[in-house]
Length: 170
Image (tube, rainbow, N blue to C red; front, top):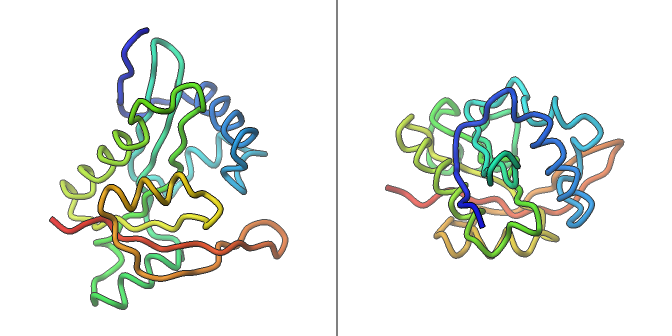
């Protein structure tokens, strides 16, 4: 099997990343929004940086670091530590297709995003839906700290309970 490479997202990755996103949504119900317009979801104006996991020409995973945009995880951390939002990044858009799992790709993608946060002076936060137990196990195993709970709002008045995290300190 070809080795998997983690590399910066390129505009030519949009079709492959959108296909991978649709596949993950079909198998895992993640994400709860963004699947109808995957290109806009993947390339939001709030994206600071993003990466893909690629095997040959196939995109099998993705992660992004976003500017804060009203997320509860950002508010929780900013209030707790008295830090300005410009020093916070939001880890988001993490997904790995089922056939590429069990290769530590989620961990590699998260660590890539965390290294970006350190280099750019942004402490990373995130929220994860309580239904996404594999993601919760990943963040716990990597030493992310739970900062509280929130409701993730999406669609027409829909919401789900989420756990907020902050990346381990340097």
